[in-house]
Amino acid sequence: MSAKDDKTQQMQTQIYPQVRIKTFGEFTVERLIDIPQRGCRKPRYESFTWEYLHSRGTAIAMLKVLLCCPQRRATKQELIAELWPQKSPRQSTHMLDVAASVLRRQILHTANGKSLLITQRRNSETSFTLPEQAELWIDADAFLHIANAVLAMETHGHNPRLLLEKAYTMVSGEFLEDNLRDSWSQKRRQTIRGTRSRILYHLVDLYQHEHCPRQAEALLYVYLEGFPTDEDALCRLLTLLIAQGRWHEALDMYRYTCTALGEEQREPSPYTQALIKSFREQRIIREHTLAYQVPRLYVLSTTA
Image (cartoon, rainbow, N blue to C red):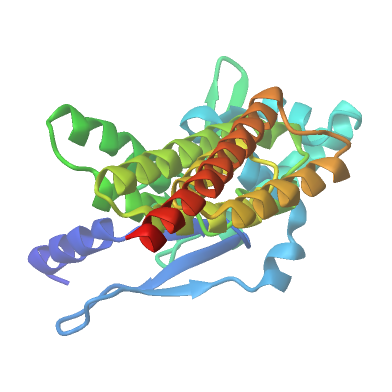
């Protein structure tokens, strides 16, 4: 291969991540097997089967912890403390060594034989690091990057709606849904949940500002399917429905959330209850006003 061809291949390879990981919904890992040639727009990736990943559960657990760590980096002792706190030092060290070997050789190896698991030793301390997004693409990190770009757009006076919509559609499920209760996933999970909520409410506000209440309503309905106890989203939806005079639909949604909260042995917050109370009072006043006006209109019409 000539130097020119080698440089061209390196540039093409750098454009596309060597490995892609999906953390929203079902956890998947894909490896780049072919870069696009002339006339082909997309690279080809090979997905590891669920059975393949499941049979390497310890290595996958180590990978997930690294995905949740700042800068995708953790020391050997930090990983042991998160994954095997009850094991003896000898057992946990052996388990980590095996997991790292499987991760390095069987999961994070690229088509050209390179491993994306970086091992560093400094001052008698061993740490493991995953490469940046250009080589190891993670959907959660891409989502957070776009969400942060929205702030920059608004700073420069641009409408961020299209970018917000793109970010929101990226979240197709719960972050690391098989590890909802694992302590090492909670910080990252809360960051993603908070960012998703911020994007949702931002979109709802933009749709309302642009006089598109139906789009805002559709977003909130779908969101509440997955998070039925989210009272912030509920209150926004109730306000939208009431503004359109859809009282019964609003009350049905409120009862739906009350049932979901009851399953968790909770009840609606005072704010939500006060909002419903104010809606009911508005409805009573409105019905009384209509009941008073109709007879008067009837008398005027018959007199005329």
